[in-house]
Image (cartoon, rainbow, N blue to C red; front, side, top):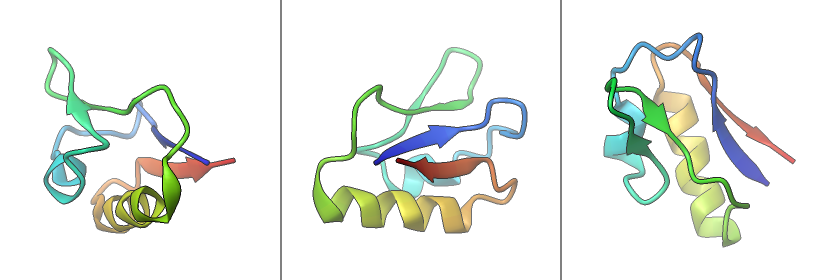
Length: 64
């Protein structure tokens, strides 16, 4: 499973980076970016789900 940020929906609130700093970085424009790798274990999946649930723009999704 991977976590993705829809760059067209993201507004740069960065709630995801506060919720799961291990999974989200900030690009030079101030928007969230994710690692290009599968999530490592249930702990990372849970952090990604938490970040997705708190995203005010619903720009985060978990994909197989």
